[in-house]
Length: 253
Image (cartoon, rainbow, N blue to C red; front, side, top):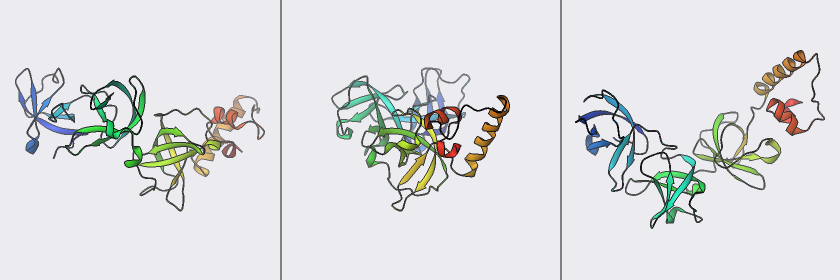
C-alpha cells in the first residue's frame, strides 16, 4: 500500500528514456516527476521516492526530500495566495495548499508560518495552521527524562510552547531558558516533568546526575587550563553561566 506524503521503496516498471514510471501496485503506475531519472536506472530497480499528489489528485514520485512530511510540523513560507487558499514552498515541484478553511488567521505572501501537514478527505496533501486540531496536550508514551525533538511555536506568559516529537504540546518556562528562541526553530530537548494532568514540562538541559557529571568535567577542564581560576561563581548571572556551559544556574551550582 502506498504511503502518501512519505517515502516509499518502489520498483521501476517503465523506463522509456524520457519518462520513468514506478509500480504502485493497486495505486497504478506512478510517474517519477524528477526532470532527470537516476543514471542507469533499469526496469526492476528499487527507488526510494517521496509520494505526493499532483494538481489533479494523481500520485507522483520524487527522489527529492521535502522540508516536512505528512503528520509533521514545519515553518514554511507563503509564495502565493490563490482562490483556494495560500500556497507554501515545501521543497517540492508543486506548492503546498493551506485552504482558507484551515487558516485560523489570514496568511500573507512572503511570510512564514508554522503549519501541520495532513491528508484531506480526497487523500491530497494539504497544510493547516490549526495545530491544536492535530497535536495533543497530553503525553501518551513519553517518560520523564526522555530526549525529544522540539519545534518552537510561540511565546506565552509562562514561556514557550513547543511541538514535541511532531505529536504533542509542551512548555519551556521563561526562567529556564537562557537563549534566544524563534518560531520554527528545531532543538533537542528533554521531558522535565509530566504533570498530573498529563501535560508536558520541558527542558533544554538534561536533569539530574547524568547532566551534572559532564558539566563538572567541563569546569575541571576550564580550571586546569586557567591555573585554577574560573570567571564564574554562584553569584554570576544565569545568562553568563548558560553562555559558558549551556546549563542553568541551578545545575552549575
